[in-house]
Image (cartoon, rainbow, N blue to C red; front, side, top):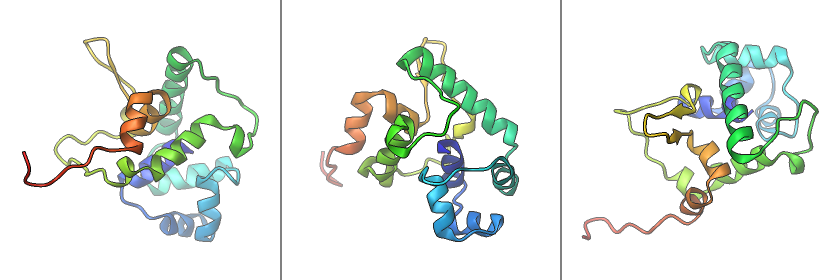
Length: 156
């Protein structure tokens, strides 16, 4: 669900538009994005197709992030339905999306990279993650998003 929400946000698509595509109310789709309602496969495919994203691209990205989170952070992917309180990644994602750092991000149209292209393994042995995943595994990044430094325009 995290990836679907990130792709929707990247493309500037409102939740109500997704709800319209799948014949649901905006509040019903909001519950799906929040992890409070399940996302049936048929609906997943319709949402992906409506956003012009191959469902297999979303699943491949999910597999890459699952492997990374398992190897680097010790997380596990469960195939059973979880209560929101038990879903660590979704809880972290919700906290990130509500954070001042996320709300105040300014998109850079010159170096845009989709969440679907990650994670990226760099030649210097570092790994570039989408911000929502970095928030979940990097305490320093998380703190910066929750308490961004105050910037005074025009001051040096």
